[in-house]
Structures are given as structure tokens and as C-alpha cells.
Length: 169
Ligand code: NI
Image (cartoon, rainbow, N blue to C red; front, side, top):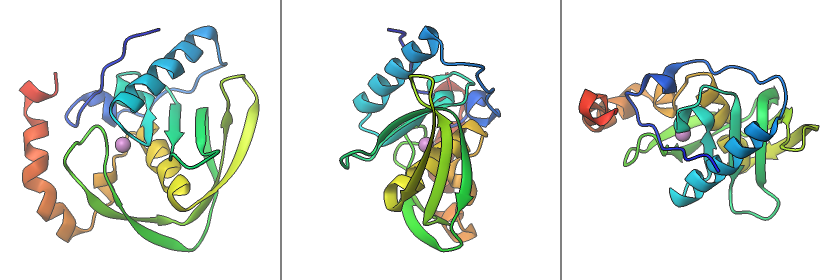
């Protein structure tokens, strides 16, 4: 299995729009296995490939609810509910920082599973939020981009220590 390491705020890979993959090769499956490993060691509920230093459109999600464990290649949100709801979010790439993000409560998402099959998933509650958070990652977007001005002011001092070059290595 590949060895991957978590990337933190300040690492340019987190701000790049990741590239689509043409197909699910054994190499891609190996990346997915390494991403599961990294996510589980970090005790996260989701991880996107850029967080592991790979600018590729791959996400893994596990809310710890039965049946809510997915790896998707080229994920695309195909529908969002008009209804939105707030959730306090965090990110493995910005440890120690949390803030409220308002997103659609329900979504549909399409992608390719590790076996190479096209799948479409309907998600609500936490699963819907995690999918949106991870799809943001492959587009170079972080949850802090969605914070209110007030919340942004609150977390700014915590963000500064990540932007320090010594920490983004
Ligand atoms: Ni994140």
C-alpha cells in the first residue's frame, strides 16, 4: 500500500482544483486503500485525495452509521435541496478549528466506485454534509471559506499558525 501523509492548511495542493481520473486502475484502488488508512488513523469521517497530497478527484466518506461508507472517484453533486441547515464542521487539514457551515440538507451525488461502476447516492443529514465538504476539497475549497464574518474573525488567530511556512512542510 502507498504511504500517504496528511497535508495541512498552507499546503498549495489543498487550493488546487484536482484532476479527473479516466478510470479506476489498480493504482487508484491502492490510493483509496491508503486514504482509508489515513482517514481512520486520524479518526476522521471523510478525506479527499488533495488532503493526502494527491491532486486527484477521489473522496472517501464514513459517518460510522451502518451503510454510510463510500469511496468515490470523480464525485459530482447532481442535486441539492433548497432546504439548508447549519452544522459545526472541522477538517483533518485544519486540526483544532471548528465553525458553523450552512449547506443544503439533502443532496444526490454521482461518481465511480472502486469496482469501476457508476453509482448515484441520495444523502441527507451528516452524510450529505460530509459529501459536500469532500467535494469542496477536490475543487480547492475549504470549510473555512463558508464561515460567517463573525466566525472567521474568531478562528483567524488559529489559522495563522498553519499559514507559517515551517508548518506547511
Ligand atoms: Ni476537510
